[in-house]
Length: 351
Image 1 (cartoon, rainbow, N blue to C red):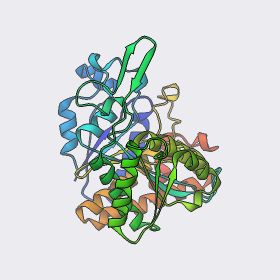
Image 2 (cartoon, rainbow, N blue to C red; image 1 turned 135 degrees about the vertical axis):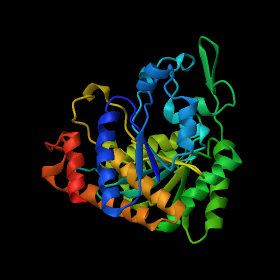
Image 3 (cartoon, rainbow, N blue to C red; image 1 turned 120 degrees about the horizontal axis):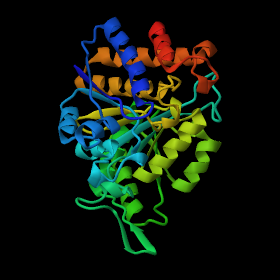
């Protein structure tokens, strides 16, 4: 089974090394038969190929069993026509990774504003207000005059249904509670379509308690009553904002995993940025990429019927949590003293 690492930019190579160290250990422990390779993406690819991600690499990811993507520094890329393509967006579009899965879980012993939080936000990943994924050609933003900018939002029946069906299936495996987040009281056509399709998908799943909330109310409820939610499904931009809020409430983006899922492929991806200000210092926290790898192992195990991969996900998650609960084995951002690489070694010890 092939595992491809795309380290990315900034702290990406450091947290990727730590993650690979851990996965190599669990592969050895459980005889999973994983084969690890690495390919440059982002600035390293731009320097080598003149583009931040090549078409050949996208096809390689398509044909790889599991891909792990580090953070990318899109803010400092040149324009797309000069090779500065957003690798994450390109992979989501080309591989049709329509569901972005973002768990937020408070960990006992760590500082958190919502100690009872344990939920998953499923965000539609290929439509919405994002200008780079709403049009077949061109962009979803236009500027008719220097004083007027317009953004077009794309919501389709099929796109809404499939992400809601994915979320409903996830809720059925958890606590059987699904919340649909929208703004259909104002965006009557676009969010009205999303809400109707999400309700249809939830009804066909069956056995779920289903509720819907307006996105503005949801922003408050995540703070007030986080334990009232299990799986939340929403559109692209709403999900982007709410998942960051939930992650921060649960302890920070550095403790939040992320998985981009399609029908055939999935990519684990750190939920945070590339942090160029601390790159190369070996002080970054690799937990986000590690937890993203947990999600990827579980997804691949479910997809292929390999219980050993699902078992590996359980064991890896437990080892990460055990490492975090010990004040002596935390990184500096969590008031510990371990480097990024030492944290990876601590997780392997706990495995």
